[in-house]
Image (tube, rainbow, N blue to C red):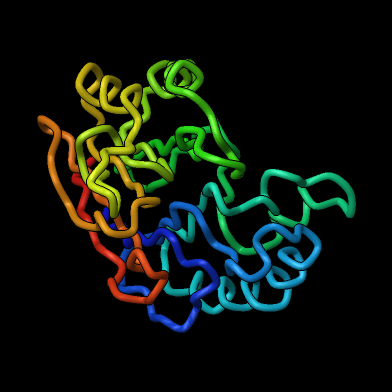
Amino acid sequence: MRIACAADLHGHLGFQPPAADMLVLAGDIVPIECERDVPMSWSWATEKLAPWLRAQTIRYKHGILAIPGNHDFWLQDQRGHDRSNLIRSFNWHYLDPGARQTIGSEGYNNTFFSLPWTLARNDWAFQANDNFIAMQLQKAQTGRCNVIVSHGPPLGCLDTAWNGQSIGSRALREYIVDNKPDLVICGHVHEAAGEDMIGRTHVVNCSLLDSRYKFTNSPRVVVLDS
């Protein structure tokens, strides 16, 4: 399976994702101008994001899978206006936090796990500590998930911020070392976009923007044999 990956769109929809079997969006979807205004974010999502998703999904045999990120307050607060059902009308596989989904065909299946939480820093959506993240990852272990879609990177791998600090999750790194998933797709740390390995696990930070929120990087494509 060929998987196109992108994270940290922050409202930038003027790009053409590459050809692949499916597209994964690893959080931080809405524009920064409206991220803290939940009704405005929903308006943008229905008027801009949904048509973009419809245009893209026909290009992917296995569709588009998405998780939220720390800027996606609109996905953290789904109360009112039947928003949970609205999300599912967006022509994507929206993977709820801590949920898993198996996607594939003809015996070549991959099970994806949603890990949107990043370590708590200031007032952002989907914030947690490593103890909570470790508890959530137990569900991935039970579900035999071979692909972790995490908004934040693991500690010490594609997680160096602008100030030189490693801000990734220790719990995620320990999970990778112990369980050896095939792939971890992440973003969050814009300036650390790239690819690396932790043992046999392929880690991809597919952030599209740089530290100044300028569109800099192209989506990445990875290939899974399973």
